[in-house]
Image (cartoon, rainbow, N blue to C red; front, side, top):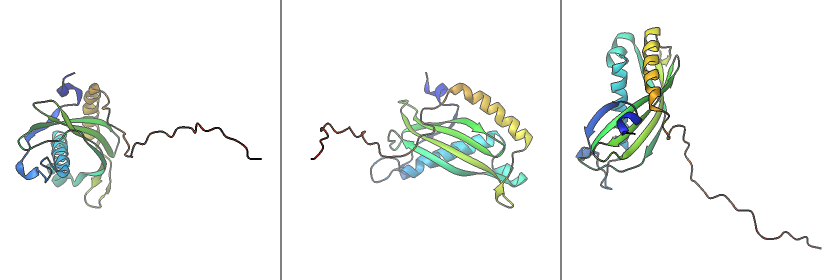
Length: 175
């Protein structure tokens, strides 16, 4: 399956900049999150939940939790694109997934799963989406369900250790 149809629509295309490169000679981890945030901003603008929405309606989206996986390093000049997939939402929350892919090689460089909360900027408390926004989110979700479930979602973080083997020593009773 081509990457474009596997991970949702492309919401950001760019090239890795020199100032994003760290002392290891590859893109610093902070810039992966920056690219994901820019793709999210583009998604919010599509739904009219972006900057103009904050200014005119006094509501915004706050990130609550995210999980980033780094899978393939990126270097200066690498062309990349970010795919976005809405996974779920309710009256106040959005759950989504993004995938950063090297445009030329198709290598998956990183993924980010995130949950955001809809907030009233006046009192900075959670608030429900209006019905027209819920309708738009339903349309997007129905479309994005066609991409399937990304294998990286719902992962936890831990050091993987081999299972302990049962002792092969016979147990003896001391008399």
